[in-house]
Length: 214
Ligand code: ATP
Image 1 (spheres, helix red, strand yellow):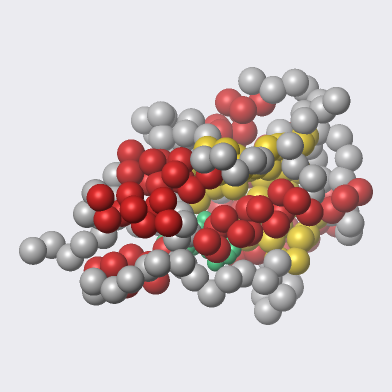
Image 2 (cartoon, protein in one colour):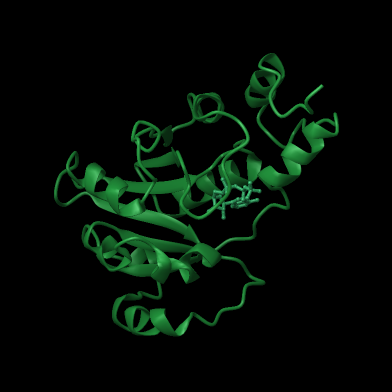
């Protein structure tokens, strides 16, 4: 049986319940055998993370320990280069059976920015793309993606077939929490209890992360 594997990248600075609930819901909805959370090393599209790669990875590990089918994949942190998705996909493909199905999870905003990604036109050679669509999002795709969507999109995500090559949409109401908000609360000396799993909170406290410099 081919495996169904989801890929969920992020800075995870820190991982929080928005990431984790979203991951669990998509994994159940798509009946994934595994959903890999992939912390990025040096994200090409954003600022440098506030804490080390080691700490971000350790927090994601704490968050998903024993929570199948969520697992951590640390390959982007082991690479001494920018975290391009195409490199990650090629490296994953080299380890998997040819008929294993890969689902790259992308928020609508990230999906709209796809044409600026390194070798973006090769992504679908390795994976399907599952766009996490918010009910309040502008649903007009940019011009550069219209032909691709016309050729590759499948209206029912459960009808996606094969190992790669299709695009579909999953509607998801995000929780009103972000890593930016959590870092801000911690810098202000406020509690983030219940915004992150207890084990992540314990890690943050034990390592004195996200505290204002004295
Ligand atoms: P920051 O506030 O630092 O920008 P973030 O909370 O958005 O961080 P990221 O690590 O940048 O977290 O996000 C990784 C992925 O998780 C992205 O695809 C993003 O859309 C998604 N995500 C972030 N917050 C939520 C949320 N509350 N609910 C569902 N998905 C989320």
